Length: 254
Image 1: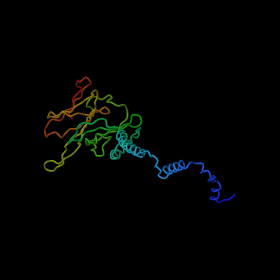
Image 2: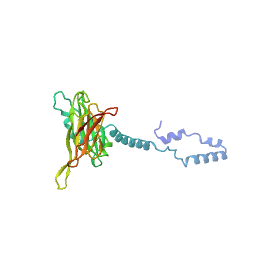
Image 3: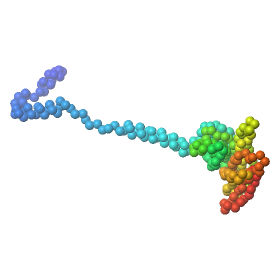
Image 4: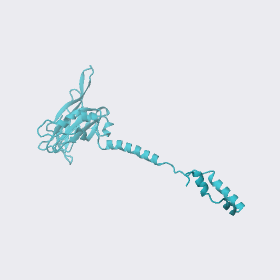
């Protein structure tokens, strides 16, 4: 057996005499058909490559969904969690850590200069919770939390929520929220913030001596709010609480 492929192919070639069995016109026709079908091959049909485009679209949608989900699931800005870092290490006996990243906005009301007044509450183990009141922009009020804000104070506590044995207005406190330059350049208070026990009241409003009425936020058994600095010599604002049926529970000066 030879290893020469050419000689092997020659040996396998049929007898050339078989060509004489084809009619001449049939042989020419068949050769023309073979040449026509083999000399100009046709490219196979190719389906449009849409898989990559679909995958890219899905990836872009997923990225957008992640951003939307981050806002919807309440991811607090680092500025907020860094500011209230001490909630994680409460020193009181029996107190447990509270993660500021778990804070939720209880409510917002209109604030000064186009901003809003908001109250946030974060909960830890058991009945432990921490609360913070802030001024923030109207834009950030639409997000989970603010990146820029004015800290208006807060508290951390345990125990049952609500007012307990206290009555409306008990423990009311007022503090300066912001300062601004006066006529002679002296720094003067421009806004105050306050809180007062709710007692049996479910709604409250603060009435200024000018007749302006400001809303409040009810959170963890107390009413929270703010008011602009009253004119010198004017009466103090009055906080009035209302029962579920609309009757007045009580009124106090703030």
